[in-house]
Image 1: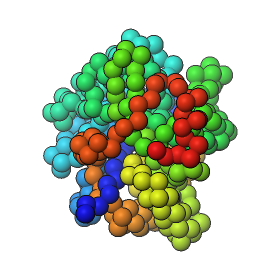
Image 2: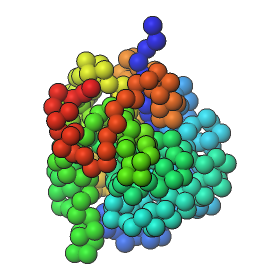
Image 3: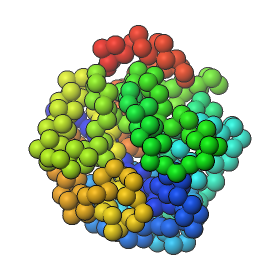
Length: 335
């Protein structure tokens, strides 16, 4: 009998993108840690024989300083996804024509560097809209992987605003950052969006714990690991036990800051977990991935989606914005 699967992905957010979201004006010089981060994470993954999906920001792909390291990702056999061009976590405020330009521009930049066009997308800051999904369908994407089914988005937004240095205009644009309570009623399992145009697009949510809908991607685990490695491991084991009980094959999310300490990512002390040094993070990340690997076959998102589709495991069809139906059908969550 084959083992259950889990998808691995890493949002390749760069130093400038974190500074920009925070409101630090130094972002405009586009400081980058990718040339040293990418070779290091590739070596770390190779030691564990892991392949995953890297969601690449188009502006980073267009930057010659990053080109050689980004080509390493593709040559090592990792999937390359689209993470927008300018990494603005308020894509839901974009008009349809601006979204189309954003996605196409990022695709072109990524393809020029790695030689293939992305077939998967994740919005920065888990931002999405029905217009964005239509653009992805127009451009032949296999899947979107943006939604984060959790109730804690407003808490994250409050924390963000308490630390960010923003003008009133910038705060207004970011007013829906990280979503609202309704996002907690969204499905955990991959499903088909039924788009207003009549087409369908596969959605692979970032996994949260069934019923509680609390996140357990690596950034959250490292936060717990600051206090106790045992607590981190226990929480992850509990989340995976809930996933197995619910029949959920998880999509597990990583970020560069899960592997970088304060000396490798200067100016990001405001970000949770940046008081941990790199060695501690690598140790905790290794323990978390070991636990996942003990229960699941780990693979990139594209291969994960293909396997689920081949096995007929993507069955739910959900109309965009149909939160009321989600509430009724998700009380016991999952299917």
